[in-house]
Length: 152
Image (cartoon, rainbow, N blue to C red; front, side, top):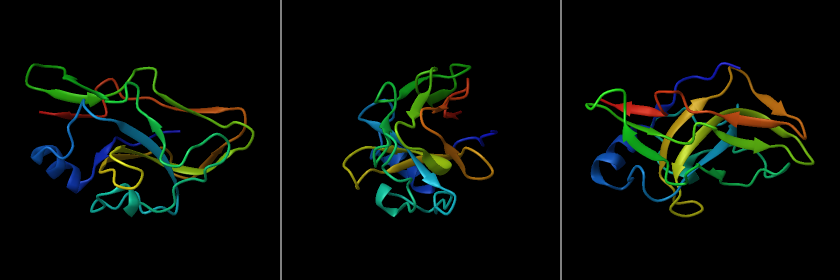
């Protein structure tokens, strides 16, 4: 599967600038959505505005999983002029346990300030078509070597 680059939501740029989202602090979660989701609509701003999260079955929990570390990492990029947001190089693993994780197409990272109040940060299209992870298999979403995104 060829995933696309992570794309920032329009509102995330404002939230980073005004301090609503503090990179490297708080808790960030990744959740998975279906092909029919509105995930790739750049004007979305909150977790509650995203449609078609995958079902809470097969070990998947509504709202997603904490990044590792939960705060994400805000570090120097390839040069001193760059800062990158990333998470553990071992990635984040979703395990289908007892039932499949069905119709996955997107991964979304959000600031977890409450079950439905989390501000959206960015999304990635994991595949050009939806796919299913059969039990007991796993889906691991790895960050690129350059991080989730880099500010220059």
